[in-house]
Amino acid sequence: MPLTHTKELFTKALKGKYALGAFNVNNMELLQAIVEACEEEKAPVMLQISKGARQYANPVYLKKLVEAAISLSNIPIAVHLDHGDSFDLCKECIDEGFTSVMIDASHEPFDKNIEICRQVVDYAHKHNCVVEGEEGGNYSKEGHYTHPGEAVEFVQRSGVDSLAVAIGNSHGAYKFKGEQHLDLDRLAAIKKALSDGGLGDYPLVLHGASSVPKDLVEEINNYGGQLGGEPAGVSEADIEVARRIGCTKVNIDTDLRLAMTAAIRKAFAENPKEFDPRKYLGAGRMKVKELVRHKVRDVLCCAGHAFD
Ligand code: G3H
Ligand code: 13P
Ligand code: ZN
Image (cartoon, rainbow, N blue to C red):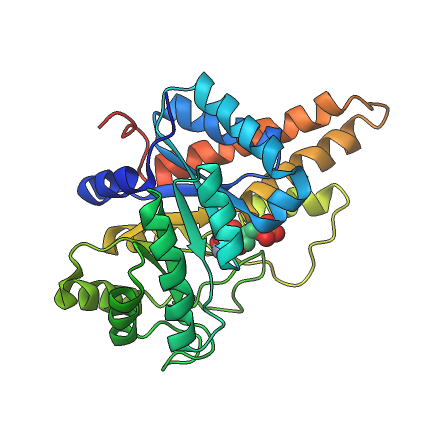
């Protein structure tokens, strides 16, 4: 099955009212875990690759690994640049055949963010690639949060094809303190403003969507890890509401890292004499696969939609 275009996945997800999992890929085991779980669950999937992943694994290795996954599976797979930080990086990925790129200029003032996104959009659209932008960094009318009216202006002027929202979400394993959670009313207001602004059922993207499961944190700590403080993620209930409101792409990386780490720590602790990397990396791969299966089946509801 060839690579599937991100636009086609978005169109189907919006119609079917499910969310696409956008899972970060850094090495072979993560890639196999994601694709095997999605294959078994018949879920379409977005593989996302960050600048750091390209530096770690080398873009050529990643490209070949993704090609292998595509050739061995039947599900629709799109490849996306996560948090592109410059036109040049986005161009590199577009030229390599990525089906979508994110240009993250949300730390720039509003007009500058639009200008940078526009430059990427102009190049991407000439090369059959779609672009994700983000509005709501330090310069938003509402501090770190996306302002619904500004979101409409941002999309209209930049021409981006999907919008990453800032609604209290953040990356990593320490997202919230106490009872904090996502501002889902704001998410609904953004979705409505985009529709009222003539942008239709516009695809929104939720970054920082890991739930930081307690059992994984406990397993890591039980086997010698030191995840102190109060690790906390987005509840699955909040993701469910975000999906219903219209988050079409849901980004998950931290939970994969936690699952891999928990399994490897356990394998090391239980078999201190073992030094075959296939044993502990294999355990990590299995754990990530089960996590991805749970996400696509029970949280994102994209399982069973691969051949819609
Ligand atoms: O948003 C960040 C993603 O989790 C990717 O992280 O830049 O460490 O690869 P990374
Ligand atoms: P998490 O850190 O919550 O997994 O978020 C990942 C992400 O947003 C990648 O872009
Ligand atoms: Zn992100």
